[in-house]
Image (cartoon, rainbow, N blue to C red; front, side):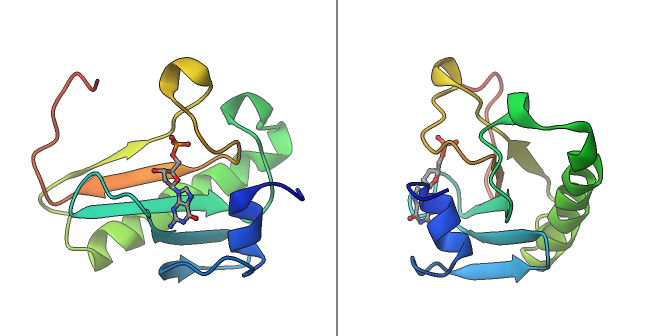
Amino acid sequence: MVDCIFCKIVNKSIPVNLIFEDDEIIAFRDINPQAPVHVLIIPRKHIDSTMDISKTDESLIGRIHTAAQKIAINESVDKTGFRIVSNNGPDAGQAVAHLHFHLLGKRKLNWPPG
Ligand code: DGP
């Protein structure tokens, strides 16, 4: 997608602090961290939001979560705990219309979220 900032990150035209990549997924540190560990995990493929995930994306979504396990271990939050959040649409404050999962940890996370 031409005007998608995360597609530009996937295409390496915007630099990021990359912490994980495979043929379908990349993960990098959020530019505006909300916790000591704040990683964004995204599919390379452009998908606007959860509402645009199709049947053929089911294994991709699973892979994102097994990537999250590896990232949690590498970031040393696997034992202390972490949160995976995906904001979808205006009420959730989704700012970037490219499906992404925030992995947050290394601090006590409040519930319910704001
Ligand atoms: P959301 O509100 O769920 O759409 O969050 C989008 C996140 O993306 C937000 O926490 C900031 C992050 N972000 C936006 N642009 C960039 C960027 O250019 N680089 C990095 N590393 N993060 C970005």
